[in-house]
Image 1 (spheres, rainbow, N blue to C red):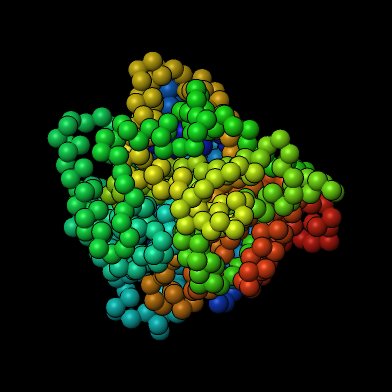
Image 2 (cartoon, one colour):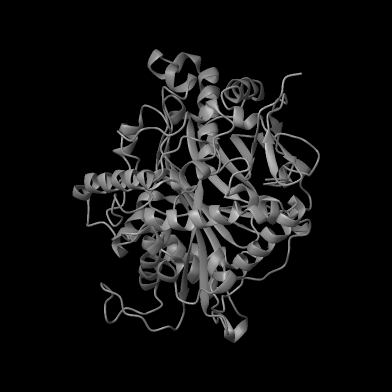
Length: 555
């Protein structure tokens, strides 16, 4: 009997196992909206072809005495129709099954992934190859020799995933087109190319790992952040300095980085008030506003899609001198404030005037990796309404709590935390904690309890979460047949996810609550600034579900 390949879960994945629940199964969804009804037979053929190139996606999740681990399997995925609610659970204890599903939903090709398997970057690579293979089968007359390589192998390249700003989670594909993709990254002049996670990996940077289609076992956290000798650290510092120098002429001066990674501790990189356990997980001891509401009847995720022209929203962000993600986060904060309270107290945050958001950062932009497994960190930003502040560039007559002031405030917090040295210091601390001998010999169920406590401590310091996958361009002929692309996650708190394709920015809000007041206010703010948008919402309440079939109810 051949021994199956297996690998212990990486640093980021462990928390998803401890934090998952019926309301938040830690599943995310990526969709490509085609210009025709999807052919299920051709999609299945495309899935079989794509699946064979991604050994990671063959894995099932197993439980050991001391840790969870991924193990190779002989299971094969099947395309399924849309019958379940969005982001329905994928992992259910000892029932070994694949950790992703591919769904055919009218004109949409949908990929849902359990977050312990992969992050948004790896999933976007998989979906890109799946859609490309499907279009090649659906429109064979459009498949030229020039596009055959893009559809048939990772090494040939094909997709361009150009981040709109530093608060994104996607990355350039790990292929020979990296130099072409990198040239398209600098979309936001307010973000220094050498100082934010939108920076493409320099073309001459040596690849640390093989392509995502060739390995199950690569752990980028261990590769980059386990303790190593001083020579290794000096080489990495020199490489980062070289990348900074190369990008210095392309935009404004870079954000200063601490000379010593140890100097980038949360005491200096995060807002004041971080102490004890909250300091370790990035939470704040300040009283943070929490959004409350009525739980959906069967814990299904409430999803609301807003679609708008990407260029018009990006222009608003540029006018304030911040990235798109920071601008949308500021609008989200204001929308939460406006939807808080009742009656005469509408818009009053009461005794909790601080709003905080968690923003993921794609580590591949600073620490080269071609792994499709999780490789990201999160940064916390906050804004306290009614707090006096003065920042360079703010007009004297500008309201302290206007959207412009809010986005500049949180942008100033985000930049130093998203610097490579600060990220490395934070992640090395987590790795040291994870690999403490005393913890390694603790049984897995007890580890789950400890991680669950850390997760709850972090959640107490957050109001919302945001994620931006950036601008996606597909290889031809797939690009011509895909309209919108969509992205959202199951959520334990209100969250929005953004992705752009074909000039359209789609912002999808998810929440465990039936109420959508904050989404309504978000739309009003943008429409009031002249941004045209359309809204589509999933049905979740009994009244909304009445009179429709179960298949439509899952949308």
